[in-house]
Image 1 (cartoon, one colour):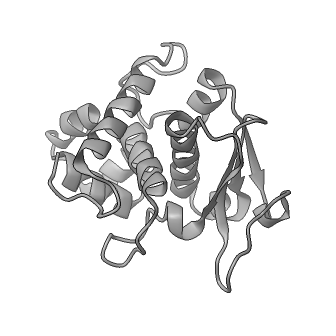
Image 2: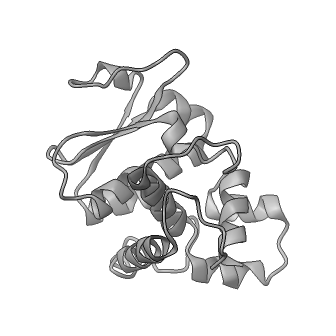
Image 3: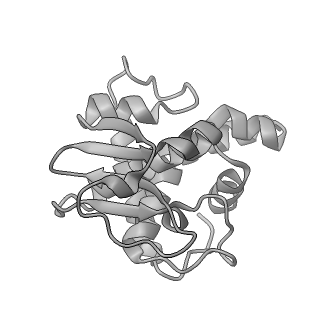
Length: 193
């Protein structure tokens, strides 16, 4: 793993998150995922392994208890742990299928890593910002960095990255294979290879 770590999350925390994502993938029944096929079926894992209902919602700000948004902010995802639901911004999901996958992985990360919380976890677009590299991305709370690291490890498992990286595939083909955006894949390759 690379020494580049976002400032809000320590190296041991990154390693623990990586291990948690690997355990989740190892426990997926073979009828859901065989451990090799790509892209990793994150929606099926959230649904079948964790019993989380996935909803694509046009306006996440209509949910009960929504925190205030500032001008230009929007929500990408929402985890309702007690209701066992993940809400995904429908507009983002339609425009950017890779964004939808990352948001589901991010919210599943909150569910797996921060399960002690029972209140809703709202994720503003900037918190699930797979598109911006770290220098341009605002500093995030550790829980958000952990959820992002979990999503990256789940969607782009280190072992499969290494296996397919050696095949000298072009970068965009690599992104398509894993169902990831270019920036998310670039950061993952930097962390793993």
